[in-house]
Length: 334
Image (cartoon, rainbow, N blue to C red; front, side):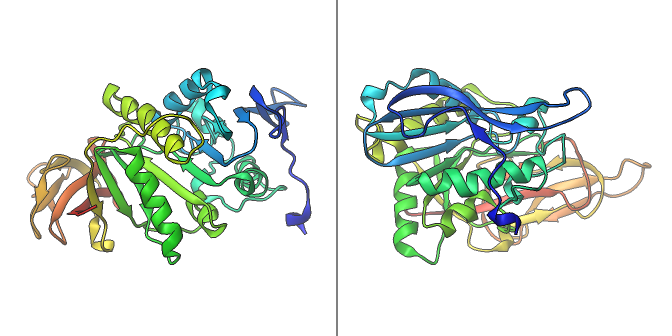
């Protein structure tokens, strides 16, 4: 069975060695321009004796930048003398997608966050997922995976964890979200959780925390500051890095049902009728989609199926049928 095969990925770091190591996860990838070539995924391991292990990743989707910016910086600056335990940093998890600036891998079109548990004999994306599933996740006590909206969505900046059947694990995750201290903290649901890194970690009983920090295929000074400060807060909260958590005010949000999501039903040009963070009443017009094929056609209206706050919106000016147009959330007590 393929699940019994060893991973083809070879790390150039020793996960049990004290100190700071900067290296690679080397994945053989034979191709036209490099017969015995490899994908070299940057990794940093910072270890100081026994203790908890944090697994930190960005670039799960290659067009999201707050995570890589925060994690490359952390790998460069974190002093092992300030660490008790181990910090494993993979700033660009889907490295081929990150290099291309695309959500999915240019090699196999693989969406890393829909490829778990992966396969050691699968595509490049599946091989990376398999290595995380079998080699990295089992080492971790807390898993933090940075996300933002990429090229097609824009979010209010929030840190998030999922509601889970295991309420003790859920509480640990939400405690870490609170420690991150983003402007917003989300109790999150997914449209489809099958194949997600989140799901793989949670099914192993790991504390899993994520973010959505802006979007539009770029980063902002504010959102990068939130990412850098927040990840140190989480490491301090977990007792892995020395120092006190620097808390600031956060507004808790909840996604109570699938009614949070609104989707375009036609192609066209989208006109956003509500700005991020603004309140929305049920049946209010969130966006209008204008036909671009000819003049004289009334726009399609996308209406809110619930009251709440606009937490995310479609980003580019053009939209296709099936695209997520808006996401609502409800303000709740923390």
